[in-house]
Structures are given as C-alpha cells and as structure tokens.
Length: 300
Image: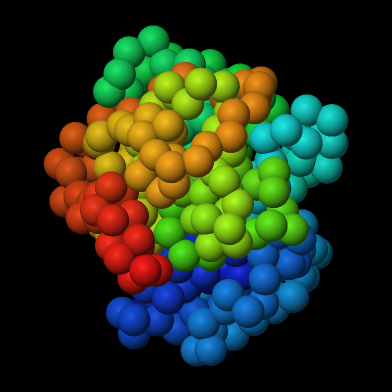
C-alpha cells in the first residue's frame, strides 16, 4: 500500500502512520506543523513540510493509493473567533484534498470526522442516523467537509469514508503548547498534570460523560476502512461505553480542582458502533479504565 497521510505529525495522524508502517505500507506525510510536531513522525515515513492548501499538493500526492485525511485545525474555542482561518483549513483544505486525490487516481479517501457533529445528542447510544446539531464552528466545519467528500466523491467516483471519532486518547494526545486542540483529550491533560505534580482540573461538576476511544484502535479502524469494500459511508468510531470525567479524575488523583463549564460542549458522548462492527468488521480492544490502571502501575 502506498499511503498519503495529511496531518501525520499530529496526535492521531502519527499513530495512523505507525500502524501503516507496521503493516508494511509506504507512507508519505504532509503537515505544516501548526499543531503537529516533527518528533511524532515515524522514522520510516517521507515527510513534506507543507500546507494541504498548497498549489503543489497534486505533486506531493502523486501515485498515492490511499489518502488518510487527518489534517485540521481542531480547536473548538478559537473556532468561534478565528472563523475564516478554521474554515479555510477544515473545509477548503478538504476540497483541495478531494481534488488532488481524484487527479492522482487515488483509490479511496479516509476522512477523520468527529462525533461533535451530533452536538447534544437526542438519544444515546448515538448512531449514524442521529440528528446533526453542531455546537461550535469546528463541528460544523467537520460535518461540511464530510458531506462535501460524500457528495463530490460520488459525483466524480472518488470513494470517501468518514470516521466520526468520539473521544480519542493515548500517547501524544496532549500538547501543552496547543491547549485548545479538540484532540487534547482530557485523559492526556490529566496525565500531564499528574506527572507534573498538579491536580486534575475538571470543568463543571465533572458529570459529563465521554466515550473514550484509544488512538491505536482508531488507527486500526482507518486502515480497515481503507481496505474494505465500502466506498461511501460514515462510521462512528468509539468504544461504546461512557465514563464521567469526574470518575476518570478520581482514578488518577485524590485532589481535584473544579472550574466553570465550557461553552460548546455536549454533556454526553456515547457511540453506537454496531455499524462499524458489521460493515467493517472492526471493534475496539482497549478500555480506558484498564488503560489508566495500567498507566498508574507503570508510573509508580
């Protein structure tokens, strides 16, 4: 497999690269390092320091069989104020990827979508037919980009699959220099603070429920989707269980600080992953509670 990964120096993208390399793929990464870090890159990948809106994108992507489109500005709070910057990166950038992939005779695009498109879900577990109700511009942009991919993809026969991630966590998830990232999982933030002798900070009362999906399970879902016989569809990628933020904090520390709730966030995320299990034959294997218990043992 010859793979092209956008945003491959970031948290999620770098783990997709690792899994691709592990499976013997030839991997090219494009990343402008606005939120990623070159130190995250697997030594076996070819790295291009450039933006996905570059006019040279078609040259960079040439002959790639599969495109894993992870690059985005995943910053919820700034997306309200930096509207044009985020739209250009998340929507225009995706259109550019679709066009370049089409001209490169790419077999399929796997898009990193988001469960944020559901907003405050009407029902949980939430399935792919649930109402779309974004609570912030970032979520709206992810949905817009996803729908562009499906609509235009069908029109030009460019297979496109969107994986709607729930709450990814795992190594490299938290970058203290990019605290607003949507991918800065509360898990990573809590771990960072505990390692640096600081108390976990919980927004609101901590009762908000989150479906946490380990980045390695997520990376595997990307490759399975690419190699599947599914051409145009959306899939929830979560664990299928939800835990409160307070429960996670209590597991890591006996001392917790509380701050005001943050606007633009849902009170619960819980994925119905039956569709991914059935059509992709994918299922997660890493439970967040066991992961953290193992991490505590290793730390001590």
